[in-house]
Image (cartoon, rainbow, N blue to C red; front, side):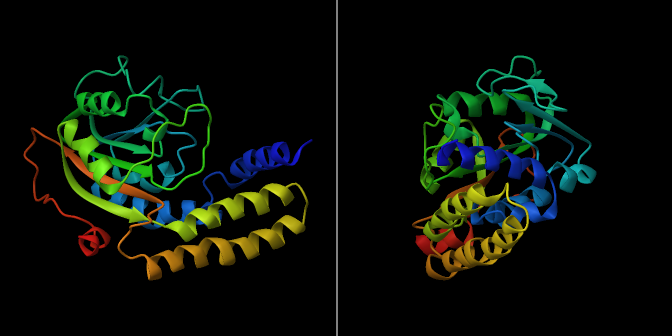
Length: 257
């Protein structure tokens, strides 16, 4: 087995072993930033009937299931407990205005036509429905050949606005140190995850040196987000009452202006 094959195999095993455990957030600064930035946004805005688009293993489901009326999911592959199998560019199996909330995390870079995908998301959301997305800005090629785009703060805002959404916030996640830390975590744990005891030592070192330290360095040295690893955005489908929602930039976005 080549080193690349070993790392890929161990990465799959690591994902299975972590599942939805709290330790999952410590795998890398990329994961850590989702728990630090995106999860609070979901907890703040998710309501009613929710659909997780491009759901993967649904790592946040158990953390927010008690605050929504229903938690449905869609993925390209028939994973366990997936409600719909399909492509977010054409969700014909879902009736219009079916959901109050949609989350779409690290998916839009893999979609050939993200504008069509966002239009479809808008179609299945009720007026005033909430969309929470996360997209990469710094990322290695992955899931090839279906890896098409990287997004700036302005790009994700434009994409959502073209889909007739009102953007409420765009928040930075991580930065260049988090990007490097994610690659190092994948390499380190990917090489030793099959070796008992050694993998536990590697996990401890990784969780402090690559995950926490790299994430903290980005917050300290790149508060403006010019080298963001990614962005998380919240948007409202136009046509609803809107409640007390107000459009705003994240603190990092304000500093960058």
